[in-house]
Image (cartoon, rainbow over all chains, first blue to last red; front, side):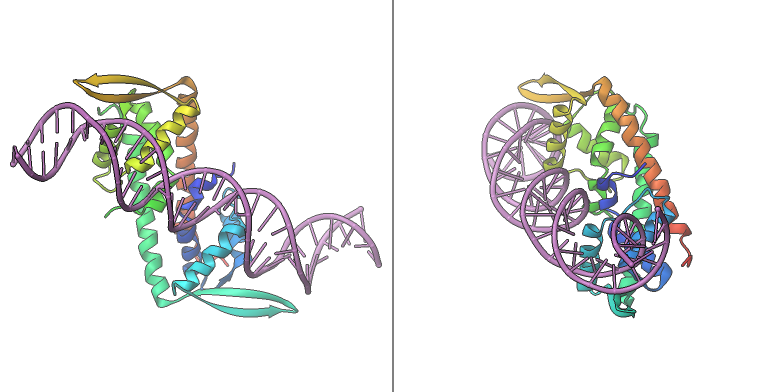
Length: 113
Length: 113
DNA sequence: AATAATACATAAGAAACCGATGTATATTTG
DNA sequence: CAAATATACATCGGTTTCTTATGTATTATT
């Protein structure tokens, strides 16, 4: 089972930030593979979604980039800025709170009307 | 704290379906109030998002409608069809699984690279 | 009497993603 | 060794979906 893209949408930025917080430094392709790996292929980030997101994070000053050359191939590494680190905490906390709220909506709302 | 709309986006349809499953029959305005109530004002569904969603659910055959007149004011009640009921189970299960997966991404991904 | 709440609806614009396409190098496999 | 696959970046048109604003009308509150 692969999760519908509408579910992934709202959490993409948070997931990317969290991965960068845990791994210090990652490049785009690595992020797609990492997400596939730790979610058992259930979340697959498309390149068309990821690269614009990374560019937006950079434009917002949440990450900085660094190029690495592997032979002739280039890798663009992304790393959190201090602002990015605190933003990551905010977003992760919001998502956790949101999921707790969702649990209430999904589980506890039993014929209360 | 009010959750960012990007988080709410992917779950709106599922939340509406779940409320209908639990309450048999609801009208639009009632849904907005119910969601505010059970989430402690943290999720506020706008009318511009809700009504198009309800219309889409109806067009997809997941709900049927029924008009009620309170004096001169009209209420449009929405009720799940059999198809809607099974779709609700699917969507709720997917969301629960998604949240479990998200927990792994947010909590357990510790320097595995 | 005026304001707020109830109750529906639409519509223009914005945001964000999907799927496709493009370019190029490196590795694996038959 | 040629072909296929994997690695690695990027953009873009079209679609979906929401936001904000607006519109109409009735009922309740202050």
